[in-house]
Image (cartoon, rainbow, N blue to C red; front, side):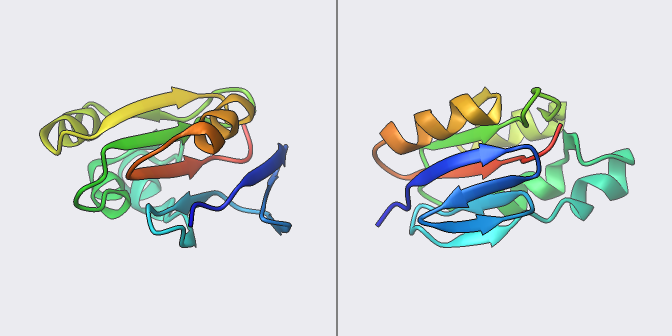
Length: 120
C-alpha cells in the first residue's frame, strides 16, 4: 500500500496522519524511513548534494521511478555520479520542490520510491 503524503511545511512532512520532522524515503513497499543524509554530507559537506553512496542506499531493485522532493525552495540536487547510477539502474528520476513532488507521489503508479527533503 502506498502511503498518502498529506502535506509539507518547512521542516516537516505529514504522511498518513504522522508528522515527520526529518527527510524521509518511502519505499515501493510503502515503508517509510529516515533519509541517511550523512552519506552525502561525508562526501560534499552538505546534504543538498546527493552522493553515489546515498543513491545506492535509496535505490531498490525493480524501482522504475524516483520522485525527489528537493526541499521547500528546491535546494537538493543529484551529484553527477548519482545521475549516472540511476541511469544505469534504469530508474527515472523526477525532481521538483517538495510541495509539488508530494502531488506527483500521490498520483504515481508502479514501483516508485519517494525522497522528500523537508527544509531548504
